[in-house]
Length: 176
Image (cartoon, rainbow, N blue to C red):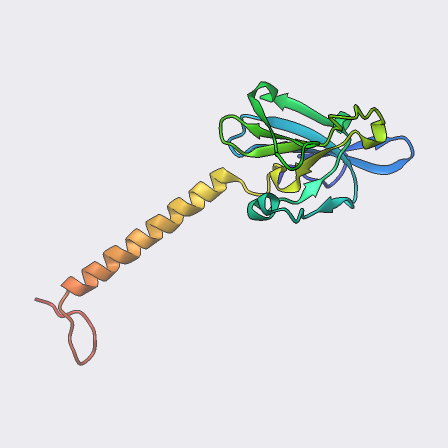
């Protein structure tokens, strides 16, 4: 796995020094189709995350983190986001990818009161959207190909052994 030269961390995590905090890390994230990509800078270890009890979040297995809005930077596809306000949660603007429909973030801005406190200016993102290079899809494709070839080879051997007459007493092939 590729690593950052300054540490033993994977490349998708970069250490960013921040005044008064021990460590901050930048994580890359995306929607499912990767039309929308963004970077999130978070304090580590990740303390503030929850599993929301609402049916939508439970069904989608969301694990929400709450970074400051200024710590979320869209690197691709910000114009590909569609907004939806849930009828019962009027202070939450859910942002989805127009292409794949994946929820990218929940904007927790105070729409009616015009909240301006930067400490409260946070968004919610799903920790499961982080891009983890632990899965190398080229290697996975090669493994699948090798598995399929081994499976085909085993099938061919089985078919060949079924066609070859066997000596019933010893189980060895009989010469014809």
